[in-house]
Image 1 (tube, rainbow, N blue to C red):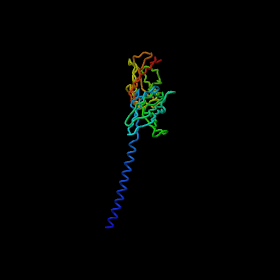
Image 2 (spheres, helix red, strand yellow):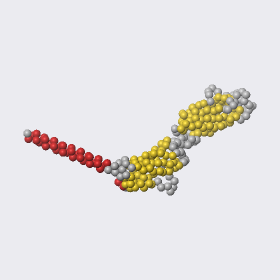
Image 3 (tube, helix red, strand yellow):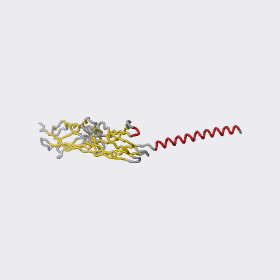
Image 4 (cartoon, one colour):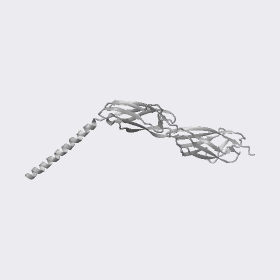
Amino acid sequence: MGKLKKEDDKMKGKIILLTGFVCFFLAINTIKADLPDLGFTLTRYDPYPAQPGSYLDLWIQVNNQGLGDATNLVVQLQPEYPFSVDPGTNATTQIGQLGSLDSILLHYVVRVDANAVTGINELKVRYQTGSSIGTWNSVNLGVYVLGKNKISVSDVSPTLLEPGKLTGVVFTLDNAGSSPIRDLTFSWKQPNNLILPVGSDNKKYIDSIAIGEQAKITFTMTTNPDTTPGVYPVILTMNYTNGNTISTSQQQEHHQPSSGT
């Protein structure tokens, strides 16, 4: 009997310890539930996608998802490349108090660098509240930038064709923009069919051209037997993907069938 009593006393001790642990755990949760919990959302920006070399209007929503008020709340935009604010622009917003489950919408204007590349670029925001005065918390928001399109035919060689002779003509394509070019289809056409392709049609495909890179395409051409010497326009067309956008570019070159003498 005495042994059972001792074991019962031990069990009571364990139950008391366990109960004390649960009470302590609940007390911690109660304290945390009274704190603010801030979330930041980039609700929209204009224009979309952001354009290099232009201004960008953006709206950031600050939500207090906690059960406690956020006091002395300060939000500060900290743009880094490719984003910036004009000198003299105030990028700090003194919100003060943001109640539990309340939200506020902030508006900012930033400049996008002219050489910004296509893709998601991070816009940095930091904030502090009365509960963490002097301590900044950082948030990164994603902004999609569509780089400038500067694909062009920079060189054609040769431009002089001999009547009836097969000539390999090389077109050099330059990507001088701030966005890679993908899935490019290049085609050419002489409106009066005085210059014709040989051995293939007038189209060729290129996987991609990186920023600042070139690609060369060679076509075998000949002239229509009835073509007289002169200068004739050739229309060049490029269909490609720039970022997530399908674009078309046209350019006109001139070829000169010679007299053959």
